[in-house]
Image 1 (cartoon, one colour):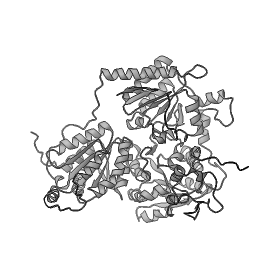
Image 2 (cartoon, helix red, strand yellow):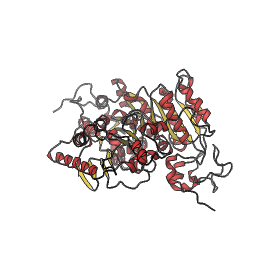
Image 3 (cartoon, one colour):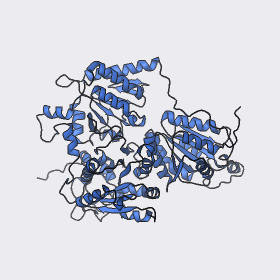
Length: 626
């Protein structure tokens, strides 16, 4: 029988376990049920409470923190708080992010009153398991802690599941249990991997041999194999960037990444050929990935609509190793783990092709083979140089999505001396930022769940994660998405985060939704007066976007004055042409400029009919009337 240790309580036990996992910041919105835990957390030290304006923002921050750090946590109060956190937890579940959701519930006495008398108090539901039931849908373990003696075992089980499955867990703790005594922690919380046995070795060997066969059966016209690796999200989630680097450097094989695994390794790597995103890829990347490479090896890549960019499936010349198995063409090998596949495949490729035997510049090869077409890059370096245009990048007055991201790419590569973490929201912001050239760990996005506004709260977690603490967050978010979560700028200001948030204002409407529902809107410019920076004033006419996509216009830059305080500066600016953007970036490169003292809100004014070039495949071509 375990003795109850003097001085250890349920609250202290959970605080100690979270600190043991390396969590330095806990995000959330307080409530009376949560108060005793937060008091114990502060008394224990080591974990800083970060109060956010919304529970959703707390979840977004914890999500981004966990992507970088390996695990994150958010704490809320029962019912109203927990249901607000649910969206972020759902996103973390889908995208395999280890997140601990702590929900403080009414005390045992109040639950007994409800059972006996039907009396509800604040935040309670007539269905006592309502919170637990919904969180069971988006977690790998969900526990209700109502007995102090069982609390240590339940907490340890949930945290172990979080580490082992790399997905969220849920801990619901009754308010009057926080100060109840319980046993001290015994032994560390460890990830529990499944044992590797003979069956797994057989499957692993079979998968590797099938990959080698696929490569051999798909040679190019010259008889030489031209495989390309497509590194994906699980390389990032499982922290396998080092093993991916080992594989491509030992074999020389060229590689791309998915959008979700962008910057999983340094994008200046000699074998990195770009971000592949189906029809939405940069044309050069699509060219070498689909047309020049003869087979594609997905390692940890998810076949989501965002990663495949308008393509509905992968083909018989693809390998897809993810979700605990490997498909090679039409064959499938279950229970093959990515962390074991990478070194095994590396050894097999080196054995068959020699060290560095697959090294190639597919851009240069394809350029030479096709007779040096003028519109194609002459080599990989030529392609990269085309992305990083000079400082005086274009002599056009109006800003465009592509112009902004081209200019930012040059700023990040040549003008700033600071480290940055680019945090991109969904929709046009994500598509536009896809081709930025970034160092390892320098990009965060939510590419499958795609909850708009995620980036604003996520920037908080990105800035506080120990792995990226020196880096400044650079956020790209659409105006509609920003209206969902703008209050999280308050957290940036309160903490003195020197974030730069580019709000892409395309004339107050949901650009991506218009593209998905009626892409013909973008086929031709609107009538005179409707295509300026502020867009059409007619929210219902046929010349404007569909009425349900129209937003109420905001002066986004002026919100900085709302959030700023005497000792917590924040700034807001508007840029509407290239000279204004150039001037702003020059200020960002100057550490002494006051604009860098705190968060900066940048309202980027764009034309209504503008969209990233990567989305052109969706826009119908104008028909000739001749």
